Image 1 (cartoon, rainbow, N blue to C red):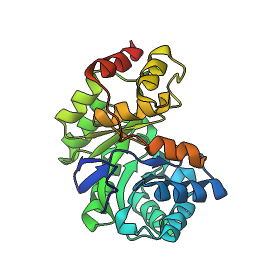
Image 2: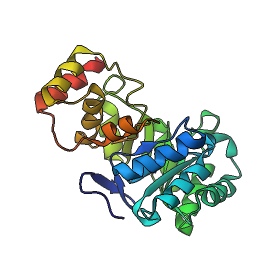
Image 3: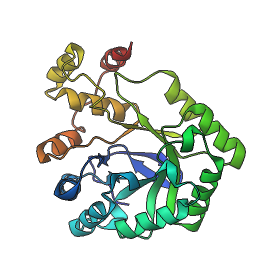
Image 4: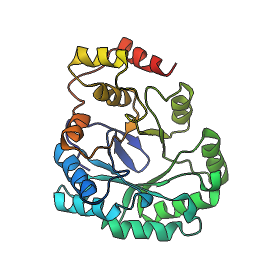
Length: 260
């Protein structure tokens, strides 16, 4: 997979995952297709979708029409929690909609019935072993539920995609995931933040950036994967323009104090 020089990645079982991705939750119709096209034009090489988003075909069409090359795009999709017993059929439908033979990452979207569900996880392992998913993981799982999957199957999820932002984070989770070899992927980073907070505004002003860019840069510097979403080309560009500045140790600490 070829990643634009501006982007960065982190190790993932099955390869590497770009730290900055383009989220497609709530994007439908032309907004979904155009959003993905714009993101790929800007330089994103990580696109996140899900069966529940009902936009996989639009995402697949946009990737194909972009001529970036499927091999150069990291594609994530997710299986709904109520598809217990038909996980592999769900993945096959996702592959058909995305017009691809495999996804780079397949996630259990939520714990089925609030439970870890090792049986679902066994189906995910089978999908990975068949080559239809290069890596497998979960979303919205607790540390205890991750351990339950590992204890039951001997296989630990590669990723846990969870709500994450400077305002909604804790000091325990990153270390606990790191100890288990699980990549932390944050969603809704901007929606869950106060972009008008004086600390963010001051740091943004010092770098000639927006508060949103400061939040996204914080994720990258801490090694968190992040998937901002927008339907506006100018915002899509802004959310990727993160590689011409760095945050100082003091600024990182100030940002992390926002959750206290």
